[in-house]
Image (cartoon, rainbow, N blue to C red):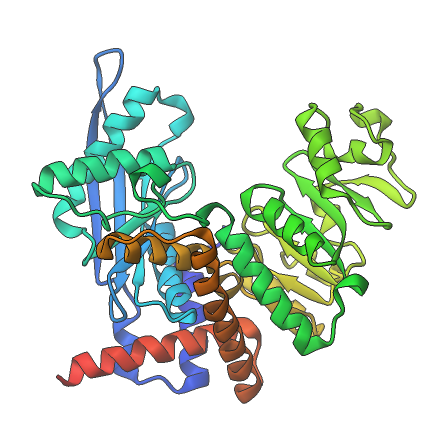
Length: 426
């Protein structure tokens, strides 16, 4: 299995070489500023105490307070959290928001915990890290298997320990707790702004451009809807149970209704709930697997599900002209090289899905200034940030004759290095 931190550092080394990065800055960027490893004892419902291991990696705060989610997953590891905190630094710097890179996690299968156990563990984690976080130090957020409710518990616990209010300590809160309007659709909306700019560069007309979206969760679902309303022809969508391909295009509302009624997406071709056996397996409208959706003859492929979907095994079979990464890390480094050789343009996750962290930053900004913005305000502020970031990455790609991923990393590290130089020389 790929070590995520080694992957992250190979990306750093590649960018450093392209941009001729100052060797002292390069050396500092090879590890996080601080790593917290904590034991979180939790009294379980049966009266026994179970101890969970938690992490917080604070990678770099040259641009501003550390920023990054907290994930609850049984596969959380220190290397994963370190890598994710590095990528958060790159993502914030790519879109030029004044935040650094951080990430946290607890090794736990949260589905096995009761609501009470989950709350006690969440509060216990904050009890262990509270002296090292805060609105001006490190601003966590939700990630895998953490929710606005959990953020609310953490906020409450943090303020109890601190002894006063600090509304900007954590983002991804419920609206009633100071969360931002527009957060639910922010990642998808940011991705759409990027697709629109890319279409201009490549001369793609929405009504002549076909799109396949792997993953119909929060990000993929909204992305498919917004692109369809822009006139793009969505010809394939999938969720964890598989998907549907229809050459004539998919009515997203109709597909969602079939899902609501208890059917699978492949039933779309029949227009009603059906069994796996009844779904057409060939023809102009057919059931496709999550593996097959990646290899369809479309203009734009949007992996919006899990990491490591496009690998050395299937990168040769990708037929899309463009890949827009809305999931985190859906393409392995080996696959990156293959797509590059094949001339397929890849818009990297650190740019494509950065609408989410940008609106998290907006939530923090509203909280520290005691303001409330409407959803229209939020998107009016998000659009120019995403457009500028896209154009800067594109220009960097053209300047060095490199991929868009390399362009994003070079641009981001330039920004971080410039701030670090100022600090080193002062």
